[in-house]
Amino acid sequence: MSPRRRIIPIFVPHAGCPNDCVFCNQKRISGSLFPASAQTVRGALDALPAGTGCELAFYGGSFTAIPAPEQEELLAAAAPYRARGVVDSLRVSTRPDAVDEASLARLRRYGVGTVELGAQSMSDRVLRLSGRGHTAEDTVRAAGLVKDAGLRLILQMMTGLPGSDDASDIDTARRLIGLRPDGVRIYPTVIIRDTALETLWRRGAYTEHTVEDAVRVCARIVPMFEEAGIPVIRLGLNPTQELSDGAALGGAYHPALGELVRSRILRERAEPLLRACPPGSRVALLVPPRLVSAMTGQHRENIRWLCERFSLAEVQVRPDEDDTGEIRILRL
Image (cartoon, rainbow, N blue to C red; front, side, top):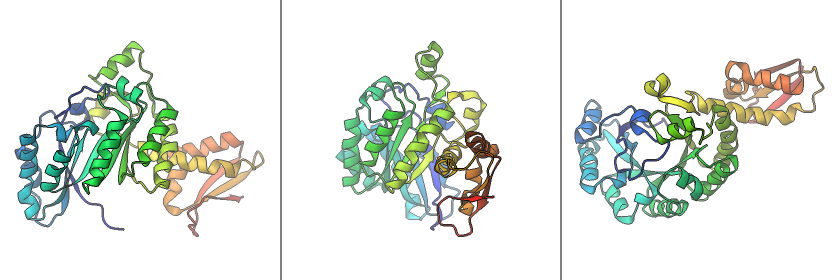
């Protein structure tokens, strides 16, 4: 396995965004209060030695919707560092309706290799209720343009948006798989302070998408992407001090959301194996060594749940030295 490439993030909060999405306050999400500039880029890269080979990533706004001269200022600032091997590729995130052939040609000229599209949902109703200002067809069109330009495509989706439910979120995942992205980020909805979603929630017009809601639906969605060979490169908002200190008012914010989802997936895989066990049985689940912690669950949650669900006297989790990749059951 090759080592994971270092990513240097540059946040451009709200830059280029023509809409105020109900869930969004990028300044609180990213912790960045000021727009990025060429000096921001230089400040992030100056201390890195030649040959570092990192990836410079512009996150948080709609990069291709920024006026072209400002895009070029940011991209050109990275050029000397590309020449010295400090940076070997760039990525940007943007909106599906802010992508065309001219904007992609500009990105390629400056060494951008990856474009992340904030699809969020493939339901036009959900997109409208969320204030996205684009359609599902915009995502289909933009994804095709990115791939035709020879760039890597990352798609971002959200669960629990206004008007959505498990079925619509699962349908979004299915339709995004059909676009053949190189990776996906899944962001269950978090109620951020100073957003329209906070107002809707406080009025009772939006029902909170809880951590449990997110774990339940993502445990269905993540295997869909993985079975299609599409890696899930992020699950849940990146934890920040501001979010943890109260900017995340409710919703599916948890510093270890990805771990909770992986644990739930394993628990659901174990359930059919335990249904035939008589009440009071003592059993061990044999799992690949790397999965022992996830199968056990945070604070042994999976162990307790399985014991109660199937009236078992004891459930142990043991490393399977054969490491078949499957879960096996051993009667004790």
